[in-house]
Image (cartoon, rainbow, N blue to C red; front, side, top):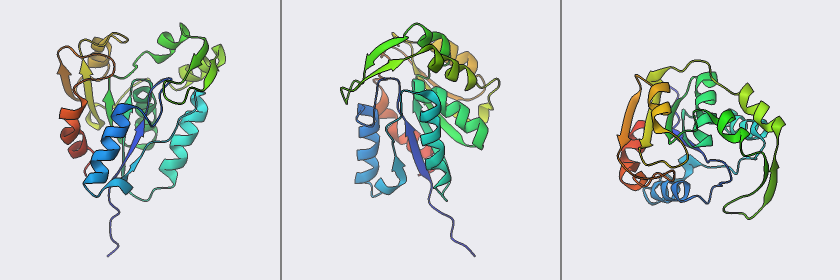
Length: 193
């Protein structure tokens, strides 16, 4: 009988972020300390949506193991699209449910929070986000984590969008998701590690 490959986590960071985000680093370090560092991947995603998706899909294609997506903000929007397309489970952290609408107001020059690299976010990129909209979601595949104090996104949009999914709605906090350290065990358990 063939041995089943160990589960893995693919972390998708948000807009203007990177693998150096505090959540990505914390989760990666926690898994590393537990001897599971080889089961975690967090690529640097392009600010171009279709290029970001191509990077994630290349990593998914290279894995024999079952993979759970963990997406933060825009990464949560991407995770939904990938989860539905590839029949995966996903943890969504303060996801950008209405990413095309939100980011349409951010067309222009931006600087990555961690790398310092500047880039142009264009109308074409907004159109790419529209093409990645998921018309319907399968609630059973998601763990939704939101904070009511998110100053960037209205958490109620995510609660409504993922109705029927496993949800943790935490009072206060902000867009960075301040409760992340205490919820890591729940995330890891959901991911099957």
